[in-house]
Figure 1 (cartoon, rainbow, N blue to C red):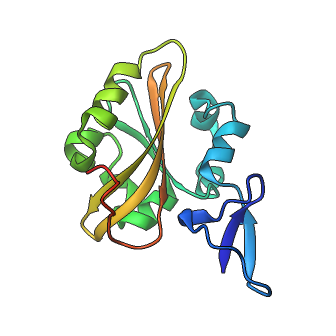
Figure 2 (tube, rainbow, N blue to C red):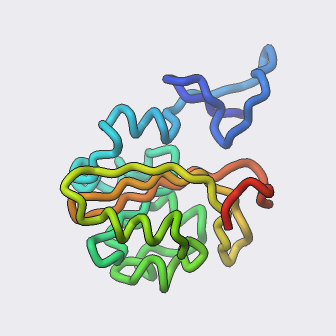
Length: 166
């Protein structure tokens, strides 16, 4: 079954082939359309959501405080990485949890923008190096007002392509 965004009609996981007659599909909301609906991922709104609401997002979610410590780690992200939330909360995200994201494009960008009075938004494709194996992901970063929200949408397949950052 393929999941198709009800707004943009994009197929989740970057699959662009046409939907065949009779193919079973389900509708959801892709990460980019979700971000548009909540005005570029307003972190204060997401901060108030309960875990059940967050787990219904079609993506993993990690929220960092101004010191880049994890303050929220969604159930969805926990399931996808195999890392229980209690092992992640309160830890430095970039040095302890996701050293594969230490780069100018991600960690430096988050540090530069976390205390911005206005929200900054960036999208990037990235290779996640996890204990369970490498995963290509589309990352939506939103930083500002003392928070960083990272929404993580996994791509199809387990290996990276040459166009993805590492």
